[in-house]
Length: 140
Image (cartoon, rainbow, N blue to C red):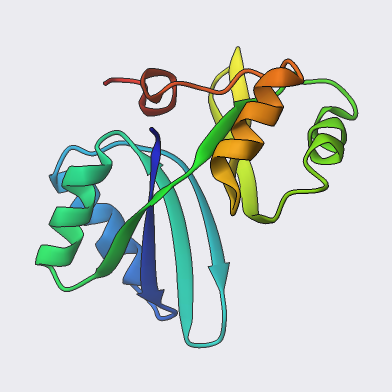
C-alpha cells in the first residue's frame, strides 16, 4: 500500500530548504509533491522513495510529519482522461488529488479518498490500473 508523507511547515523563508536538505542527507528521493499554503503555514504532500525513514528523519528534527495511505492511479496522457476518472469517482468523497509522474510511460494522480477500498475496487472494475508500491517509489 502506497504511503504519502505529509509535512506541516511554517510559511517562512528557508523552511522548504531545511526539509529538502534533510531528505537529501538521508538519501531519500522526492518523487512527486504538492504544496498548499496559507499565510502562516503550508501542507506539503510528498511521494518519496522511503516514506517510513523520511517521517522518522523529519520527526527527529522536530518537523511535524505523518504518513497517509493513498491511491495512485495511472492515467493516459489524452484529452479528458482526468475528467473521465473523476466522473467515475463522482459518488466518492475525494479529499484531495495531485499529479503524479515518475517516467514518460507512468503518470497519473495521487488520490486521498474517504472510501478507499470501495473506490479502488470501482476503479479496477472500470479498467483503471492502480500503481503498485514499486511503481510509485521507483527504487523499492
